[in-house]
Image (cartoon, rainbow, N blue to C red):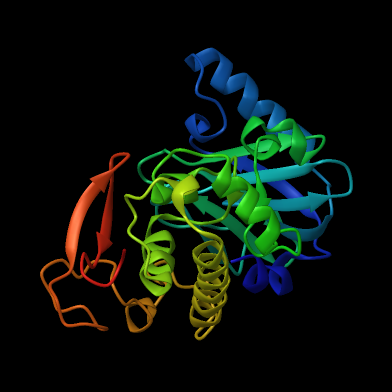
Length: 267
């Protein structure tokens, strides 16, 4: 999303910000929501967007002063309108001279915040090493695994340890590395730790390539990431044959999320 959004908004000035549904700006009382919405609208007026960044699962619009931090949760998305007029459900509209960027979340679980620095957001401040960064080395990852008694799948979902790995890709990486998601992280041996590190990087890079072909089309409200099912080897395949050993794929719950794995070839 960050890569596709940059050509649309970088260098543009926010002429006007409109908060249509203040609940995505503040979770407080109705009065505090109104105040937060008014403050956001005032703070962003006239601001130029210098860049678009990502931290874990947060998208950041870097401004001349401060930043807008977006978190999409489950259903949030961005829509681009070629004029200042918007249509359909829009929570926050960022009007620029060349069009309007709309933050949309019908369930109102997402969040839009203006901060002086992204690190002011507790969720960002508490992020661990990003799984696609140079800091995510095999040695650092091995230290994290060795220090945890949690099931390895639960550790991979802990954003304070490793940022950017979601439920789908953690299952996929564990399948590639042939590791049972229920195993305590500290029980993995060195060769397994290295194999899992490589699997995580490979899965995320392949998913990124897939999500950029085709790239997000913010002008189409019905657009969704396409083709991900082509790269999935285990996620969502309960009862179907494992693509490696042909045994049925199992599904269990871990931390309230579904985990898919092959009990025969993941040890």
